[in-house]
Length: 68
Image (cartoon, rainbow, N blue to C red; front, side, top):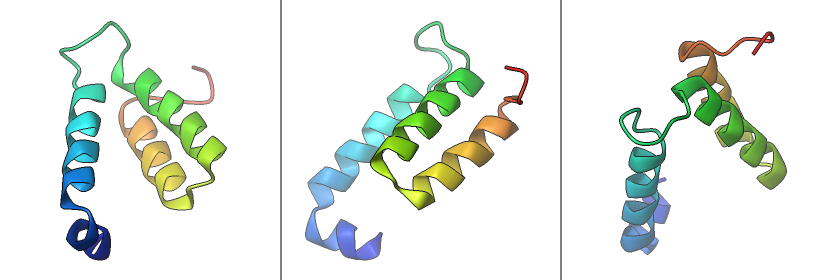
């Protein structure tokens, strides 16, 4: 991440701002677990193993389960 930050600081800042808005529970009607599960699906599509693991953990922490 440090290399990416050094090479493209504006892009990294934009990504983190996007992440902050998407996962802000005060915006929109989807709960956090649902948002994280959508993010898992996107991560699978883009084949980002780091993102898959991170969003899966965050989904479970937000209350997602196999029964959702």
